Length: 242
Image 1 (cartoon, one colour):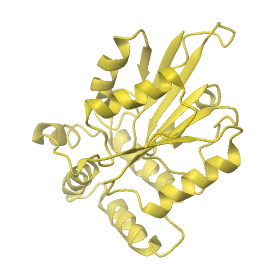
Image 2 (spheres, helix red, strand yellow):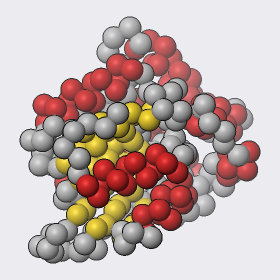
Image 3 (cartoon, helix red, strand yellow):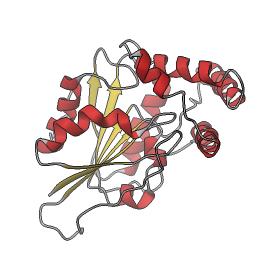
Image 4 (spheres, one colour):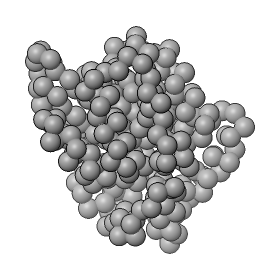
């Protein structure tokens, strides 16, 4: 059996996985999405469909960005495979890139629940998709219908991102982990990517594998790159894919 639970990142929602669902479901993968519920969608925390004793069971947690810190810890712990897409252990780098990142995050925090909130979120989503294009309607869908409780959750999750210093709680040391890095990511600092790889190598029994995606930003858009990740999951490559 092959099943997936996917967790989106900060200010996102479960709709971002639409193309992923189409690609995986046609190959007999069972797919479930988590939802934080920042907007009109209700919060949802799925569980694995199959008992851990199921023969040839492959449980995959796919996490985008902060999603690795938002996903249910028991779900993460019982995953046989984990895909970390432009993710991190510590978001704010400890080196020379620290100050500008901290300043941007503080400004974003102070903008939530003010008249400038929509403008801040719009800029964030454009930057997340850069160098690729994001449809204007898709951007606006991320700005409307933010509920009061959703706004509280948005702010609390940003605090969680700012305070992140280590690998997400629950990551099993026996998991097979794939690091997916976009080469034109305008959200994550290079030191943040290096720190994640170092932390994973110290934590895991098996060395993590890495895929570096060209022409992609923080948010993955290209079908060919989704298929690269699917290929790794189905064949468990022994060597890093570059």
